[in-house]
Structures are given as structure tokens and as C-alpha cells.
Length: 346
Image 1 (cartoon, rainbow, N blue to C red):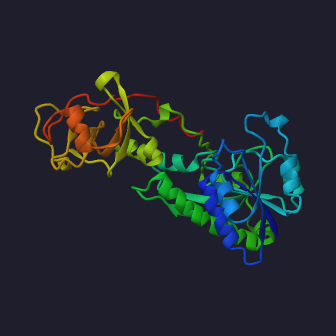
Image 2: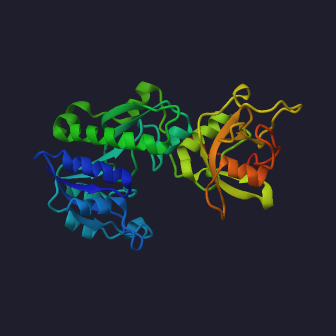
Image 3: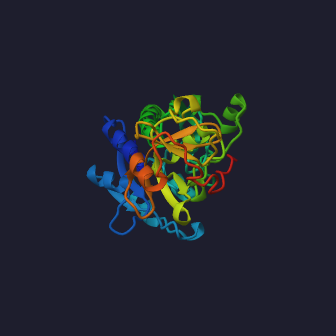
């Protein structure tokens, strides 16, 4: 079985490496296809493919309208391949390309389909506080993303403190193993295990949903809601998560959270006649954490990077922006609602 592999990012590069290492004469990856790279910056998949000695070819530029894209170089590079395998590619494979493979094409998708179709299923699973997700091997649908019949799924638990990048690495490993199980007996997987997503959704009472890319406003942690929701948003976004500091006209700050939210009884703050309000902040008594107040609890912040500045510790931030003793609550350090919430799954 000769495979053409389609991907872009570090996730697809990891699975490609596993696929090549696990071949054992059962299959052979003949070509790797990825988008045209930015100048002097090949995508992770292209770098990995070159390291593995694979022929690489670029898909048409995404800026070109779908109807006008020229896939002929890809068709030529894949002419000797029997099967297409897609993971984190970002393009719909055109029908002529899918039909050119004698065995069709498979897509590896990191979600419990039909939940979280689309480009960002890992982030949305973490952001929504899901305690379970999956990897799915599905048939490629030439007209719609992530809607093909499911050949196999493997469920994974999501840790309460696990970030999207940590979960993504585990999903890559589980997905590579599941994909190789399917490839080892593709005929049986299609004949005996294939199920439509409508059937799977009905059996679990789960409606299809979409996981769109997150926009800039989606990156803000909302301090006017539950602290757990803000913490889950940070786990999904990690270094991209933002708060707005009220000082100096409203500075943006990237934040690194240290742990799960803390209740008042465990924050170690000095008694105050006024109840803390969302947006307040305090330096912990041991000076190791900046505590940012949400509606119901505190977010322990380990470090911040204010725009135009280097990343600094909680203690350094407090010295520059709070000017208060450790354990003392300072009012209104952060904007409460800097941006709109992430759109609900649809």
C-alpha cells in the first residue's frame, strides 16, 4: 500500500514520523503534500518529510479561490499512490484527487465526531471543560470537512489541568496508533466497522458541532464569570491568552497561570472590609503568584508579559503595577470584560 500524506503542522509531522517508523513493509509513504510555506519558513510537516527522505509537493496557495486552484502538480506527485491520508491539512481534497487513489482517502481528526468538526477541535474541547475527547479515523468527504463515515475511534480522558498542547501530543500518539490499526486491515475496517456520523451522534444523543478558529477577541480571559471557565480558556490558549491591565491606558498582557483557581480560604490574603470584585488583584504572601479575581475565585498567575516588555514574574509585575504589600487586594487592576466570548459550538 503506497500512501500520499497530507498535512501542515507539528501534529501532522508527529503522525507522519510514526507512520513511517511503523510501516514494516505493510505500507510505504511515497509523497508528502503541504501548503506553500512562508518565505524561508517551511511548515513542520515539510521539514519532517525532508528529514525522512520523502518527496514533497506543495498544494495550491490558500489565497486562490477553491474553483481556480491547480492541483495538477499534486496529482502528478501522487500518481503512484494507492491511498491518501490527511491530518491537519486545512484543505478540502478535490474529488478528482480523492478518486485518483485506488483505495480512496482517510482523515485523522482529533475529536469525538460528530462533535467538534473543523480546524480547532483540541482547543474547543479544553475550552469547554470537556473531560473526554477522542481521535477518529474517517473517510474523506470531497465536499465537506470532517463529515465522512467513521472507521474507528479511540476515546481519551482530558486532565483537569491538561493544556491543549499537552492533550494534542497525546492525541497525536493515540491517533497514529489508531490509524496504523486501520491501515493494517483497511478492508475489514470498511466492511465491518464503518458507521455514519449521523448514526454515531444518534447513539450518543450528540448533535454535530463545529470548532472554528479562535479570533483575537476570543483570547481574553473573562474575569466577570466563573474562575474555572477562565482557567479552561487559558488551558486552551496557553501563551496566546490575554488580560488587559488598566494602567497606562489599557496595556495587553499575555499570562501564564500557575494552577487551578483558588477559593478565598486558600488565597492567603489579608482581611478586608470589602469583598473582592472581578478585576482586583493581589500578590500572594510568598510573592510567587499574582492572584487575579474572577466572579467566584482567584486565578493564580505565575508570569505576565506586558506589551512592549519582557516576560516578568508575578513579584516583578506587582512591584511595577500594584505597589502594595503581599496579601493586600488592589482594586481594578485588570479589565473585567475586554472582549466577547467564544461563539458557542454550532
